[in-house]
Image (cartoon, rainbow, N blue to C red; front, side, top):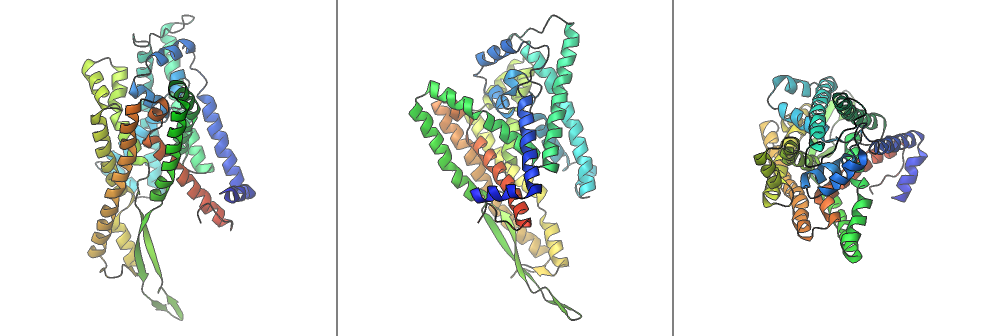
Length: 424
């Protein structure tokens, strides 16, 4: 591991990408401490701490890197973009134009990305207005500055929050294009990690130091098992028939199609969490009793949340895997290249074989992700420890998934320069 890190810094181009990524993340973290103008920061912090039992707000604050509790310019965090991505993924299944664009390669993907940006800004505007009304409600009781007209101050606050959403999107895309790894995933990773010190401190104050140490040891012990399953693959063997073109002999080789047990990564957890906490966001913005009761029922710590979370995670595993992997296209490409699966006839039989294999590994992969997300939540709810509440299985799986994805990209870059990577 250490030698691979040193090798990464020996490659000038890779070193620049790493430093660029770290610089953007540092800039993002700095922005999470810059308060929105017109909001009394101390009064908001005190009011937010007084309502710390609101599970939905704790979750949203976690994914914003504690920026929401400070009402900084980046308070909305990555959630508007995640919600917009979910909407666009779902719409591709029902809108023919989006389906065509998704099959047009890079040009079509640019169009979808552009629409996703507009949807993100629209959701950011709704969230900004909602948070402004929420923090001025009786629950928080924050009073805007009286130095300027209230309407002008409100417009400035909303505009600043929406600009923060645009800034987060820009930072994430910069990391993806010019840095290492997926920018949006790394921002989520940074937000979760940023909450570790305060959570550990709070846990040590409310619980015994031995209990805090035990929790950390359990988390560290679970990580190797998650890494093992995250890298597990079902390999479908592929043979290529020999072809003679003039004096050249083509084909005659063997390879495989690698299908990951968890092919969807952390996307199902993010999608499921976003859907479950969407009523909580609405309840935070609109003081309606039935909506508040629904959000409380769906919040973490209830059996309804655990059951729906597990079902949604398994569903999104199948949904996302079907979106990113098309057995029909794979079988067609194999036929065109002269490849075949031993013992399986080309064409329809190959398509069905790949679908069966994909379904057999996606189901246990989905159950595994659901267990990682739900079981720790059940166990941790019993203890009530702040460290466990903030960093359950979902957070661990997201961090491990993002770390493995980033390491894989570093691995490919190192091998391009003939260096040994992270994975042996």
